[in-house]
Amino acid sequence: MSILQVSSSSLSSSTILSISPRKSLLTPKSSRIVRCSVAGTTVTEQKVSATTEPLLLRAVKGEVVDRPPVWLMRQAGRYMKSYQTLCEKYPSFRDRSENADLVVEISLQPWKVFKPDGVILFSDILTPLSGMNIPFDIVKGKGPIIFNPPQSAADVDQVREFVPEESVPYVGEALKRLRNEVGNEAAVLGFVGAPFTLSSYVIEGGSSKNFSQIKRLAFSQPKVLHALLEKFTTSMITYIRYQADSGAQAVQIFDSWATELSPVDFEAFSLPYLKQIVEAVKQTHPNLPLILYASGSGGLLERLARTGVDVVSLDWTVDMAEGRDRLGKNIAVQGNVDPGVLFGSKEFITSRIHDTVKKAGRDKHILNLGHGIKVGTPEENVAHFFEVAQGIRY
Image 1: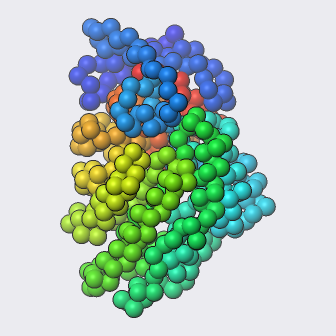
Image 2 (image 1 turned 180 degrees about the vertical axis):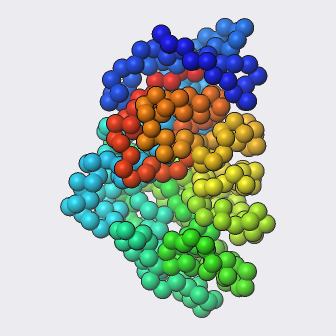
């Protein structure tokens, strides 16, 4: 048995991780066990009572669990050969993401191989746009394209509030089938885009590097932007409730571009709408965990916590121990291994997982990447990531 001596600023004394001999790297469920002892103290492994509720939900609630739950952002697709083969048959992203049969098949591809603790719906944050009278497409090699970006109050007036039952019934059908397929072996995850991020795509006409159009609107015609943000807020409240009623057991809110705002502008154009979403959803679905992710969020962590979400997902630019200290122990955290780590050696991947888990501590942590998995990531390294993660024992 090998012994790895590690230390963390989040612990007052050194921690010893004992790792049993490695099993096959391609076996998702491994017998690898990580046990912790603190110098001068004997720590016995706590027994976890049997329950049918998924590990991820129990961890978010702060219940005693024997290991951190694990899933990966952009888990379905991109790096898997099975997904690439399916893309050859169905080259249009919208064809793949707007067909319940394909959504279920793609969502289950990583589940069948790696058995993650979260099975996330294969979709896109822009999926609701068509139902809001905002024509768009997602073009391979170019990304999203908004055909008629709104530029005035009159344009925003033409944006309709979202009715998911009418516009995206395939999402509800897919979630129901995923829940039936997975049962409570893992949590079924839905997701939506946050109002500011959706508005950014819509106003910019697609992806952007400098966000000049959305900022021009924010700083020259703030009432117009606020009107659009209100419509997206109301629509995303409805969409989250719809996903939950269809089978989603947790929902992640992506505010990917909110970190392009200064703190004062975040408080004007993002924070109030995120709060509004959380408060409204909790009124009807008080037990639905809400996860918030914003890439490059180091400067806004405390403000993200003020939204009222159950989980803040950290990107890899934030040290996990420091993020824990800044957020406080009452809020759960997710993340935050650098996706680039999965291009490294298996030993390097293992060490980074251990470092993240040690710094996060045993309470309220979901192990994940700090961003979506990258195209070209070796599938065997993903298998190793899950093997190591699922073999950890607090």
